[in-house]
Image (cartoon, rainbow, N blue to C red; front, top):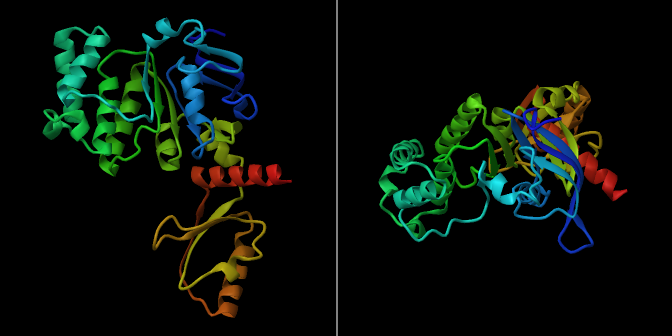
Length: 317
């Protein structure tokens, strides 16, 4: 195996901060050169710790790691010269937005003429024109995030690590960033992308791994993961009242509550006919009407929720 084939190779990686509990617990995966690989998981799944180890910011407790053919623990300086990293930490720059791009490009030894051209292009692409003269501490959280992501592209790199890069961004800016990342991979850029936004992952990633409590539960292409749950359907339903008594007894289904007011309950099941029959019967018994009902094919979010639920049930036993 060479890094031309796999930009990242991780085998039996473990990490503990206190010597007692492993926040990354014996995970293995490969990221092929030129692909976008997603680490999916809720907060605390171990995604950020994994990225910090791969970028030499943390030393692993144990395991074998190769990033661009190098061991991050032994070749940190050489590795950092070839990668880009956007972590979740806030940017505490004291200078203006445009000066921040200049300094960042200078640190990466980008020629001034190239630096100026890329700075203007990135400021325009990330819609920062109105903010270019502002000091970083005067920006909102979303604006700071845009600068953090944008300026990483001022230098050339082989591998980009993005840890929840679109948190706090509006939908249009988020989409523009994802489109740009996708476009850059056509030139050979490899991306390791962490998120708990499943729609982003489905749009962006070639392959994904689902993480929970430090472990990788499943990994494959998105289409293959969906096929592994063939036969499943998602019932989306909105009730005119409290549905707790209605949903009791649906033991063979994964039920995801509404994300916001007016959103539906999502019931993932292999027995859609039986589930719908039960919903209708119990809604009549409880005097609660169903105002909206829809059946659709399984999505990556459905696969994610069912995988996490199954893992939690095994852990609880």
